[in-house]
Amino acid sequence: MKIKFQILIAFLLISTNLFSQSNNPLSGLKKAEPGDIAPGTPLMLNPYETPMYIGDTTRIMGEDFMKYMMTNDYIPEPYIDSDKNVKAFVLRKATVEEKEMMRQMQQQGPKDITVKKEITGQTAAPFSLNDLSGAKYNSDQLVGKIIVLNFWFIECKPCVMEMPDLNNLVEMYKGKDVVFLGIATNNETRLKEFLVKNDFKYKIVANGMKTATDYGVTAYPTHIIIDQESKIAYSSVGIGPDTMENLKKTINDLLTKK
Image 1 (cartoon, one colour):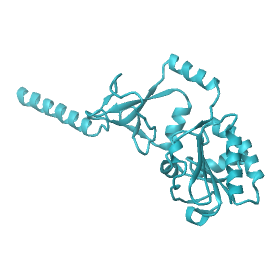
Image 2: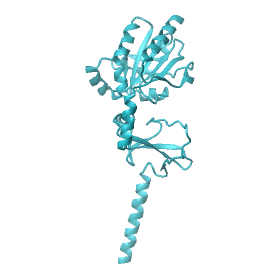
Image 3: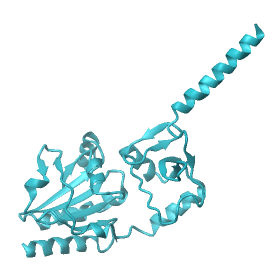
Image 4: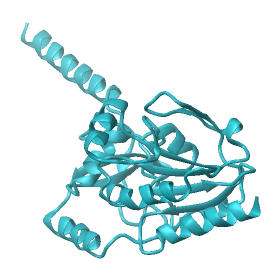
């Protein structure tokens, strides 16, 4: 009887272990160590492309991921497979030293950095979007107009900081063939609550993560200008002293070219 009981316990332990492994999304992966990932390898923090987890099994998606990252309390650690391909990220609590480093980086101020210069001149990804008022914006129907896209989310401090300047930009080109779309990753309810107290004159689109992914957006805010022939004329990420001037210059050049 004692032997049978021991066999039963052993079977239950093995079964529990197998069940745990089968339900662990990180099973078969390991945390990347120094040297596992070649220097310069781009690591895209896009929760729709590469799964993001808190702990071992709790997956987080776009808006929640951004909220965690904006707290500066977490560091995303890559997990790789046997071929050293990054298959997932796990957010761990940042150390005191890491938090201080991130704080110092923020105090240096945001920089205006043009990203993905190679996309300039390429055909813009098609889109069909509805703003918060229900108005529809289809890229095919906007051919002949200049389209100014701002990718943002509520918890992004630089995104909110630049809103007054972006509002001035909208006013400056009122009556011109320029369409301003603010594509947010937040849901409609959250955005409407935010906009009650914060004025943003762009046409606001909710749940815009798919569109952000289509345009290769991995950092916020990102600005993209599409010309009258559906080609990308400008792309930048971040805010800085030249951001608004670059946006104005591009729009003015396109209006003159028309």
